[in-house]
Image (tube, rainbow, N blue to C red; front, side, top):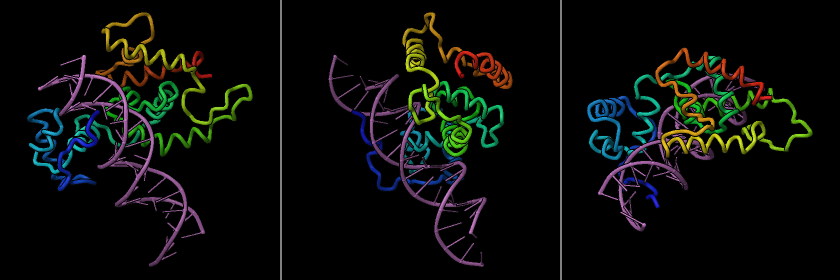
Length: 197
DNA sequence: AACGAAGTCAACCGCTAATTT
DNA sequence: GAAATTAGCGGTTGACTTCGT
C-alpha cells in the first residue's frame, strides 16, 4: 500500500540528532507556512531530512507550549491511571496531559513507571487470569476496552455520540490546564471504586 | 582512573489509517 | 472506486550518560 519510505532519494538525507541550525530552519519555516505536507516542509526549509523526521522533531520538541522533563507527581499519577484505562495508547494518554508528547510519555513509562508498577504490583490473585503484562486487560475486560474504542470511532465518524461513554469528549480539556489535572484526579478517585479494584 | 552494566531518551522504522488525486 | 500520498501511531534502536565496582 503505502511506500516503505516517503523519500525518493535517501542519498544525502541527514539522520540522527538535530542541530540548532536545523531546528531554527524548521521552526522558521513552520511559523510562516504552517505544519503540513512534511515532505514539502523538509524540502522548502532546506533540510536534508525526511518529512517524517521533521514532523517528529516539530511535534516533540519545537512546537510551542511543549513541557519538557520534570513530570510532576500529579502527572505521573495521571499517567498511571490513564495507562490502566487505555493501555499503551500513548498519544491518547499524552492528549490528556497538556504540553506532553506521546514519545515523552512512552519513554517515561518504559524507564520509570513500568518498573514501579512491577515493584508495587500485588501478586496475581489465583482466581484471576494469568496475564503477565501490565496491560489493562487484567484490570478491565476486553468488552470495556472495546467499548471505549468503538465510541471513540463512532464519534469521529458520526459526529455525535450515543449513550456510550466517549473518552475524547470526556477528557477533552484543550484549554484549561491546572483545572484539568485536579479534576481528572477527582474523577479517578470517584471512579476507582468502579474500575480499579 | 578505568571499565562495563544499566538507565535514559531522541530518533528511526514499519505499519495502518486517513486524505487527496 | 482505486491508487497514490500523507499523517500518525507504537515499538524498537542506538548514542549518550550515570552508576557501581
